Structure formats: structure tokens, C-alpha cells
Image (tube, rainbow, N blue to C red; front, side, top):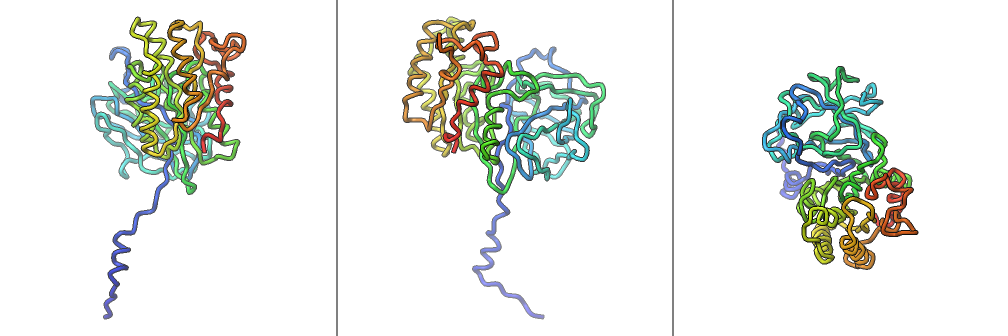
Length: 395
């Protein structure tokens, strides 16, 4: 019998040969939050299925889910989890349902304060596809990690209905529950634009179930421009602030987790600050200075550049007429916007203030774009915001 001898160089090559490279990028996102509802008002999810519909941005040959228990103090037991292409009212399209596994097993326990990635799912998805995600919670989720605003209808139903095409005895829910990201893999090595902001980025007051937030429309523009492997991950949180606590951790506190840790992130568009200014006036706290807010932007620029992520700053929208407007606060906003327009420290600027302002009174939002509270844009306003983005900045 002959013995096959391998030269040392070949042995080293075999031992050190890497596994096949995977190129994941974030295609959809909901930043994790703590539920602020009193425990007695939180829905009882014990032995119930939670079903949610999301629209991804970029597509791929495989997907994986990111589920979150990051804001929770107790481990979370997952039962069955399924994903499928979405029909109407959360129904799954025939022949598209996939069982989701974790470490090659159905079901999992997510430790307290941790996220959980699913195994890769061999499910080709096209850009802007709508997915239905169904999660069975055998023991419920008394302090579930959520995303408070969804602009989308979700449902819960009794028992394990994860494999059902349509739910029986379902009730609707408002927030995102447990799901925090959808990632895609394709041979092109997709990339992701993260949009970091407050309610205006989160899409508060957008028409529900219509995908009319400005990051949604930006994703559509990228697809039409042939940037098919570029995704948009919406990291907006309603009532979020740069420096102090509103809803969610302040932007500086969550920047690493919600921006720099996003797979495939190459750019971040930052639209933050109006809540720092407005809430200080409303709550009779010390107004942040221009230098305070510019300092926060500089911190994010430095941290992003350390990771090779480009920073695009957006000017703060006009808000005169809103409940927390003040002349003192608006002077801060105008000065900060002046710095954003002229600084060379960032990698670009989007003048959303100018795009949405009333030409006759530039410190107010134009009525055509105002949902009615002088603070939040309507669907037309979100479109103007998305159209104001020069796509050349995102290369």
C-alpha cells in the first residue's frame, strides 16, 4: 500500500484555508428599545404567535434574522420561528414559507441583554420585497425588547401559528416586537446606508403600512438608480436626542450598536438635534449650546471615521409652531445648520432644512409638507426629504 505524502506547504494551506467568505449587509432595521408601558398594560404574549411584516431594501440569495433581547433583563424563550414572502394582512404567499433555525435547531433561548442571529436561510429575495416574520413565544415576553413605532400593522394569535398561511383569532399590535434586523447575502458584497435620527427618520405620522418614511423612499431611489446591492437601515427612534435621554439611549450612547456594528455599513446619515433643543425649552432645562451639539456631531464623525464609515450630516428641519419651539432654541438650530452647511469635517451634507422650509417663512415647515403639528412631515414631506439626498454622496 502506498502512503501519500504531502509537502509541508500544502499541509499548511489545507489547515489554514478559510471557510467560504460570507458577505452580509443590513437590509432592514428597527433600533431596539425598552418598553415604557406599565407591566399591567403590556400585552400578554404567553403561548402566542407574533406576526410582523417588514419591507427590506436590498435583496440577496440568502437572508438571516436578527432578533433582540438586548433591552430585557430576563432570558427569552423562542419557540418556532418562520419567515415567508408577505401577502395581504400578514398572510404568507404559497410556497415561500421557511423554518428559521438557530445553531441548526428550531427554537432558542436568547440571554438577557443579547441579540441572536438566525442561521442563514436559503431564501432568495428581491429588493423591496415584503417579508412576514412569525415568532411563537411559549412563555411570553414580559419585558420584551421592542421598537415603539412601526408605521405597520402587526398581529398576535393564540398558540403556535407560525406555519399558518393566515392567523386565526388574531389581534393587532403597534410596536415592533423582538425583531431588530434583516440581513441579506449576495455575491456582490452588498453595502448599507444607516439613517440615524429621531421621529422624523423613524417615520412618525407616515401613512401606516405604506412604506412612506423618507429612508423607505431613499431605498426606492437607490434601486431605481441601479444601486441594487445598497440597503438602507432605518435607525430612527421617535423622541431620540443627541445628548440627553428621551426615548432610547442618546445618539452618542447608541452609535456603536446602531450604526458601527451594522453589517455592511459604509455611510451614516445623521438627522438629530431638534429634540435636544425643544425638550430643553419645554422642560425648562438649560438649553444646549451650539458648541454642545457640534461637539456631539464631531464625536460621531471621529468614531465613524475610525471604522471607515462616511458621515453625511443633515440640517435640522424648521419647527416654528411646534409645541416646544422657542426663539432661543431656533437660534441654536440655525447656527448648528450653518456649521453643517460649511464644515469640511463630515463627508457631505444634505440640506433638509432648505428642502422642506416655507420659502415665505423659512423657520417654518411649508404647509404642503406639514402633517399638522409644525414638526413632523407628511408623506409629501418625506418624499421631498428623500429627493433632496444627492446619491453621489452615498458612493
